[in-house]
View 1: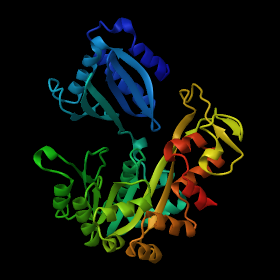
View 2: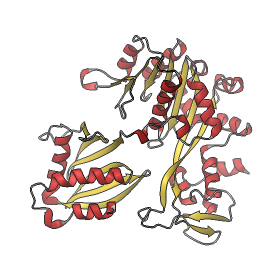
View 3: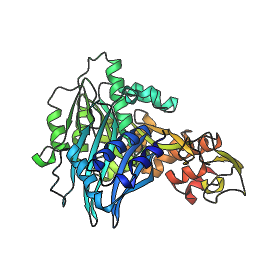
View 4: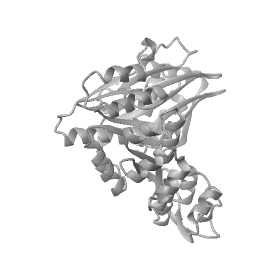
Length: 415
């Protein structure tokens, strides 16, 4: 039975009167979401019920709705499973659900709205298939090899950057597994995260608890006194966390962390804007990995050419000349989305390179760093994604969804 059929059966109206309706619905939706490869399951309250959506390959899809008379029961069921306060509906809450067979770990977040509590379930698989190492991510060979080499260093920082939903945490965890495998468990690895998304054996992982004063900054400050060889900081969010992380990188620890920025070059500019001196960045950071995820076309995709097809799915909107490409169609296999799975595109800014270090020391901004790298033949994330369009792996519409319409300056840079 397909996931669509499962959900239709779960939502059958004549079952609403059943006292176990909410229990069966929540349990069934979590299982169906896992089987469909969804990363998030949304329970959105409306004026007449609860709208259900899930995110697959980074895109949100509506899957059904729950009548208003049982909508609150569904959210309460989630809160019970996550051990949240069911009577507290006016403030956000966060918790976790671990299914009995340990096949799925679910993070629950609730948020008050004018129509009731909204809940989002983030699915965190615990199976062996999710335990990727660097070579399993599909990184470009030059990026993969450079990261693998940087992970063997005994000090310095490795930053993994990208927007929300670009797979930064997956890459960071793959880095930790790579270190464990290559060091024969002889390196002490510890982390401070908000929250811990996957438990990694042989890594001392800690989760912040701001309600008792244990935040990223205080956790990291204490962690450096735990004799770690490798420190994983879930995310650098503020100048103080950045300062402590880079100080650790300068004084003998290898630091791995994520950071929100559109690409590797913008990350350097944002850190400088946060007040981190360029000379500290040049000395503390080994490399910056910028990444993004684009959806791969399903085998049902059709061929298109200039002058035909959807105006939002043409080569001209990419700011390049391209006569033929493939476009999403949709079939039962891909749930009519036209796409199946995702492909990573990644770039690497190597600060051990004296020329790159000199650019940063001279306070070069993101545009100058990007132009410098382009002059060295390094392709940007968008340019790599466009190559995927030319190879028939993805569509122009997907590149526009992820990166937007090409700015005139980008078009000039390619000419």
